[in-house]
Length: 153
Figure 1 (tube, rainbow, N blue to C red):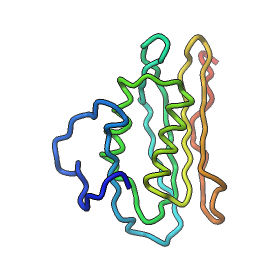
Figure 2: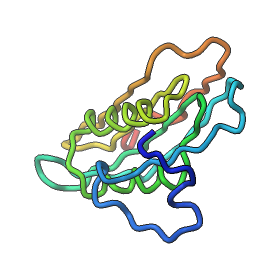
Figure 3: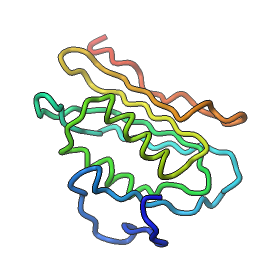
C-alpha cells in the first residue's frame, strides 16, 4: 500500500486534484469479499494527459479490470489519481502501462489488466494493453467493450 493510514483519506472530504500522478495517493480498503474470485471494472471514458512533444492534450478511454486480493482501490482516490494526469506529459504507452503497474504494485490484486484506447494523434489511433499475468482459472473476464477506432467508418 502507498500509505499506512487506516481510514480512506478522501471519503466524505472536499478533495483537490493532485498536482501530478506522483503526488496522488491511492487509497485501499479491505476487500469485503476476500477469498472470493470476482472481477471489478473501472472505465474512464474521458481520460486526458499531455503529449510530451507538443504539450497538446491526448484523450483516451481507459478500462481497468482487476480481481481483488486482500484490498480494493477506493474509487474516489482512483478518480483523483487519473485526473492528476491532465497536466502530465507522457507517451500513450508509458501512461497506460504505468497506471496498470502502479495499481498492481500497490494494491496487490490477484490479477489486473488495463486497456488504453487512445484517440488519433497524427491520424493514427493507438491502443495500449497491459496485464499482470495469466487470467486466474475460473475468473469470468468479459470483453472490454471498446471498439477499435473507425473514424467515419
